[in-house]
Every structure is written in structure tokens, then in C-alpha cells.
Image 1 (cartoon, rainbow, N blue to C red):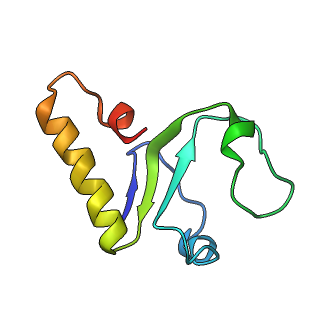
Image 2 (cartoon, rainbow, N blue to C red):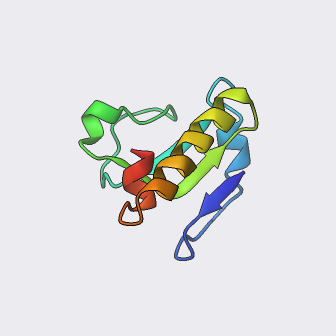
Length: 89
């Protein structure tokens, strides 16, 4: 599943990049404005100094991702004031 905010502009197909990380159940953007790596690898979360931003979220089908999404949905259902992005983080 690939979810992106309505204001996301894709200049090319992201799937070839995502396929470089077959072990990742989730790939998600951040709000950092500068790259934290000098190669085409994944960003370094501690260097980004930013929470995950689900404006671009890729989820692979599998038991792990189903469990995480299930818990996430449960958290959201239990708290009407919880923002989906805060729940994800």
C-alpha cells in the first residue's frame, strides 16, 4: 500500500526505490529538510531530528505490518482526539 498526501507530487515512480529495501515492512517520510545520508540509503532517524510524517507511507503486506496497523487503528478508535500521525509515531 502506498499512501500519499494530496499535495504530494511524484516526479517518478517510487516503487523501484522502495524495492531496494525488501526487509522493510514500513517506509515513511519525515519532516526533515536536509538529507541525513550521502547515498541512496534510508534516512537516519536520529540525524533527522524529526518524527515520522505519514504524508508518504509505504506498507508491505505481511503479519508484522498487519499487527502494527491493527494496533494503530485500535489506538485511534479509543481516543477521538488522537491525530493519526501522532498515533503512528
